[in-house]
Amino acid sequence: MSEKLQKVLARVGLGSRRYMEEVIAAGRVSINGRIAQVGERIEPGDELRIDGRKVQFQIEDEIRRRVLIYYKPEGEICSRNDPEKRPTVFDHLPQIANDRWVMVGRLDINSTGLLLFTNDGELANRLMHPSNEVEREYAVRVMGEVTPQIRNNMLKGVELEDGPAKFESFSEIGGDGINRWYQVVVKEGRNREVRRIFESQSLKVSRLLRTRYGTVILPRELRTGRWMELDKTDIDNLAKSVELKPRQGTGLFGMAKRRTERMSEKPMAARRGGYLRQQRRDDEQQDQSQQQRPNGNTNNNNGRKTIGFNKGFKKF
Image 1 (cartoon, rainbow, N blue to C red):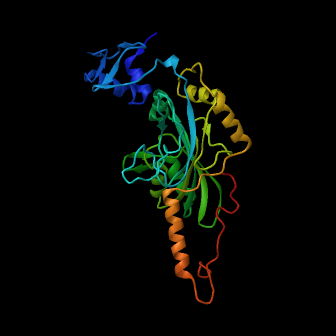
Image 2: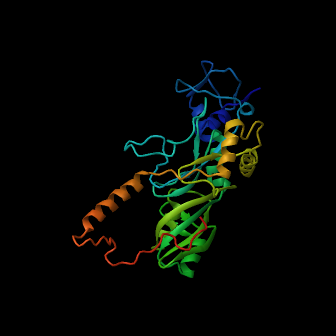
Image 3: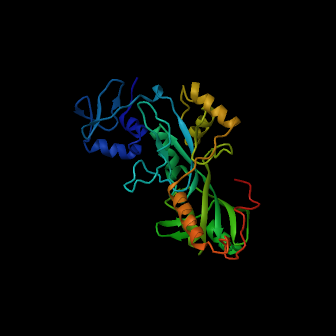
């Protein structure tokens, strides 16, 4: 049983298959102590190294393909390590023996919602590659009026600094006053793409929540800061959407399966905290203390009417 070297390296999560071919051609990869060639096959038990560092691998059919979905809260960054010591999306994921989680796509620190993680580097690369046009769906709260002309502009395409961009679909889903919610779909997933499309029309995004990535929808029972693992049917559908074959052994077993079943019946509470949320609470407490009056008046709104958060908006 053997497999092409560049495919193994891509699946480990070191880069796309094409990039791995470039790395191999540059003489940076060795098998059993000799320089490897592009297209060469590797077998279980071979010693694989890149730039002298040993790489642990398994042949594709031996690996159980796994996919996690995670509800990212505001204030976490999409990185394994942060010099500023902010919380990251990897902090609360389960350990995976002799393997690692590869993140599919990113969300900026102010955005929330669905993130995918998998131990299959090839699956991750295909889901992110623009050529596969995998849909990403978002619920977006926007400050300002979206006129029919602005809507048409964003559907037809706008020019950003890194090229043209557009929404594949655009619909209104709720909200009051100047803050209204919209559901949008993009297929590329460039950095801050949704926010920048709105900004090109002089509109500000005040909240952004990813609700779908490809065939995977953010479950209602999944709370902020929590994760759950997909079962075989969902993983196979996701793999087929990017033309990957289903794999034997895929799916939930034992404790992981029981945990997911319990979560469906009794969802876990949202995980409190978050870097930005804590900062906001600290600022609010400081404002409250400054606005206290000797006569006992504790109205912190200075006469302003308090509007309920997302009043009348129950979709998400």
